[in-house]
Image (cartoon, rainbow, N blue to C red; front, side, top):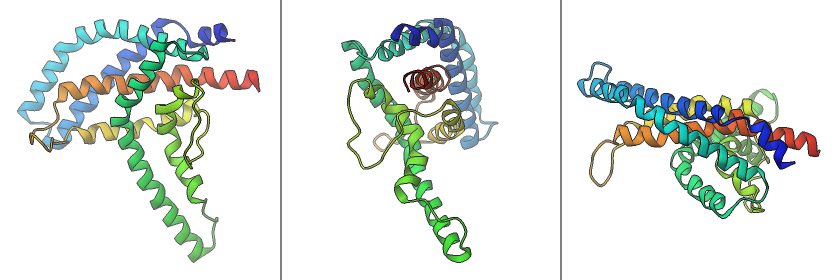
Length: 236
């Protein structure tokens, strides 16, 4: 029932609010990240903060069409037969998100092996709970970010050909539990330096991309994932 799913997505206003929240959180994280790297008394940091403040009217104006476009994209995807434009945007979305969430997945991959090693040592020494298999441990740690990046492709009939078995969807609660990790990685990224030019990453470009990274993540967690769960409950 595609029409019912579109109703469950809610109005454009909800997506506009998510777009505004994503932009506000992105600017706050970039500002805080610069403060942790350079000190909150840094003169350049205050200049960035003042420019972010002056950008707020533009953020409000851009969030109106941005939120509407987000809703249009997910309404199109949920129909089950995305348009050519929807397919193209799914590919672009995957590439844009990979630069951020690929890094989150990389840290998750490392932490998964650390947890697996610690539980294995604990089991050998104290005979507690047996450790999960490596595949199940990786799935538990990697599923939220990888599913977030790739889930539109499931509506294209593309199957996962890898060895890692990922769930078809991730619950809103589980996605939101990973949001702090996303914000920490974003703050960490404010100190990145270009290998070619040797310059720090531009905070304004970073905040622009991060607005989309976070807004889309919040849209999937709060607005899209509940619709997918309701669809599974209805069809199952």
